[in-house]
Amino acid sequence: MLVLTAMVGNVTAADSPEPEMRLYYIIPFDVETYVGITEHNIEEEGRTVQFMFKNPFVQEVVRLLEAHPVTTSHLGWIRVKADLRPRGDVYLVDRDGVVLKKGSNTTFRLTRDEIKDLEGKLRNLIGVVDMEAYKYLRERK
Image 1 (cartoon, rainbow, N blue to C red):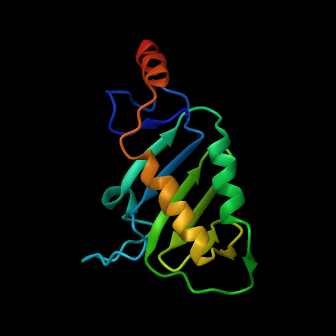
Image 2: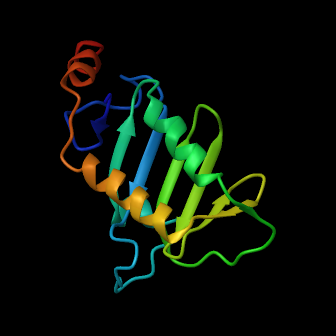
């Protein structure tokens, strides 16, 4: 998996290509936080993973998030922010599985099983560093 955690190295935005996807997340979803997590503070409060190059996981996440469109849903405390900047799409997922695709304001809903599946996928990313991506980005400096 081509994953580079945001904590690795001293790579700046000017040194590296635009990430394919940035994921900010709080797991487990049902954890109570002392401070409400919003789209504005999840980047500071959550874990961060960047996918620097095209990766099937990115499309897998998008398919999962867009699987069940709903007409109206209230967005609560955020647990995931998926920023697909090259495409211009940003998805926010709350603790109940409500998904908002910003820009279009389209809403979706994850099932309980899909929330658990997403939590498992995110848990598996903790501590992963793609050394080839790290070396590539360091050489570009």
